[in-house]
Image (cartoon, rainbow, N blue to C red; front, side):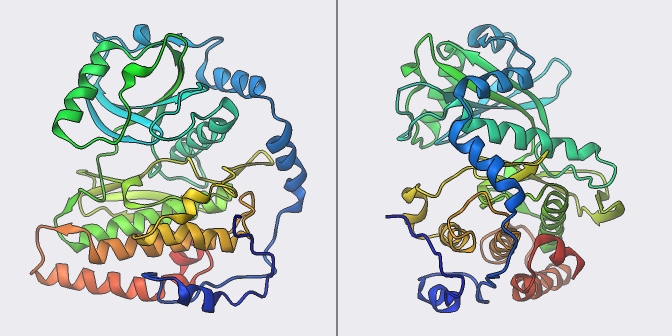
Amino acid sequence: MPLIIRNPLLDLETFVASITNLRLRHPVQFNPYRAIYDDFKETTERRRSVTPTCDARDTILRKCGQSEPLEFADIYSGSALRQCRKIGEGVFGEVFRYKTDAGRAVVLKIIPIEGTLVVNGAPQKKFDEILSEILIALQLSSLRNDNEYMTSSFAEVIQVRCVQGRYPNHLIDLWELYRDHHRTANDHPEAFKDDQLYIVFELGNGGQDLKSFEFSNALQAKSAFQQAALALAIAEKKLQFEHRDLHWGNILLSPIDEKFVTFKLNGNTQQIPSEGVKLTIIDYSLSRMLSDGIVLYNDVSNNEGLFMAEGDYHFEIYRLMRINLDNDWQCFEPFNNVIWLDYIVDKLIDRARYKDTKSRKHRSAMKELRVIRDKITKNKSAAESVNA
């Protein structure tokens, strides 16, 4: 049975203390009187229960600018994907990167959908299950052009496509090359047949994930944290956004020449010293957002596997979020963003890699990160944390 907390007076401090290896130094600040957004509940429950897959299919095709799925091998032919290679994977599917004729690096996130074949140990998503991820990705990408709430720290969506067919041979060759040089947990894509459907995200290249990135020093790490906090704050205020899965594999970093990264929060421009690094937040498969009066979210209330994993701090966060939300995943609880910020600063202090660990500026910035870690969970939201 899923853990469903219905008692708002539950002693969360006692609960949190009982969780082994929990990173939080402060008890979860659970607010029994938080708004449940009843105005949107009826709309969201109607969407959850009766939205037919055909309606979701039509909506996705419109967002893709298509009337029907396109042929996989035609759209992503070998001649179209110059200097292509596989760069990552997940339960969702495969990630490749190629260069356009203009020399721009583009990332392809390829997700099989609607099939009966179990892929990478999980059933394929339906159109209505992946619709929210597409809409959230498009909305967050558009914030880079917003006049009041502006950030370029979410993945740039260049194009979303719906394609059909077998995996192209050149992508299979690249998949096998990756398998031969790296460990892979994914199933071989040759298993897909002619009628297989996929959603393909074409994304701007955000760089390396936090897990593999090497900072010059902690000044860069401090800038990365500030960029993450401001991005979450902006999306939180504009869209009632929660990421809900911001582990260090979903944070990308790349070197930049610009001295500052610019944000707008409530119309006020803020410039963060880049220290030569740019942060990008990716993967919204568990995210929650309010758009045009509709709550977009992934209902994981019955996904026991998500809540059973042990080891890293981020597995504990899934359980903490379930408590914060009373296992009702349509609700908005901005403190969940704070917990993920706490996770990020913890990784930056204890797990991130640095070239320079002996300089005064590194030690000073690391001290500032520790101060942030000590105070971050006293905030109720990401927006409050950047104004503290």
